[in-house]
Amino acid sequence: MALDGRLRFDTAVYLYAYNNFRTISKMVPTDRCQCGQSNSYGVETAVDWMAFDWADIFATYAYSHARFGGDSFYKAICSGDAGSSCR
Image 1 (spheres, rainbow, N blue to C red):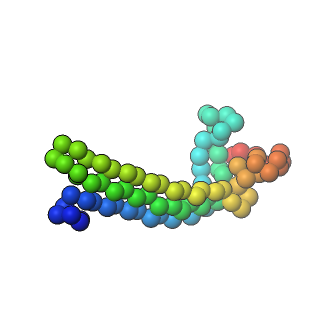
Image 2 (tube, rainbow, N blue to C red):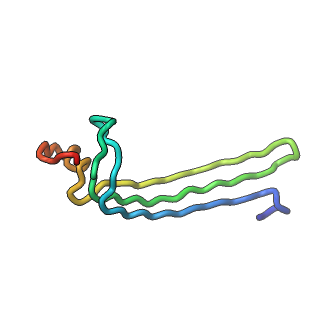
Image 3 (cartoon, rainbow, N blue to C red):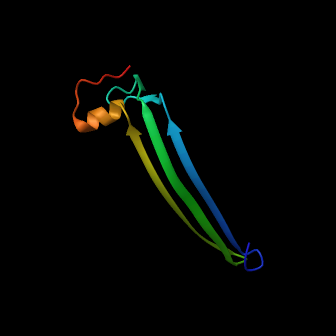
């Protein structure tokens, strides 16, 4: 904390790597998809300043980079490979 506790910072960094990722199909929402590999990384941060007893000023920022990879169903859809199927 800074400024006698009136300024606060919060930051989170994350990294995910999944194999055999499952989700709901975008094409048929009731279907479950075995979508292969999924990778994601990002950062979330926030600053909160109590400027006055009656005013709190804050700002947040988030960045996320998420992708399907390998033999992913969604990767095949995006590249136009109609031979892939959702299981």
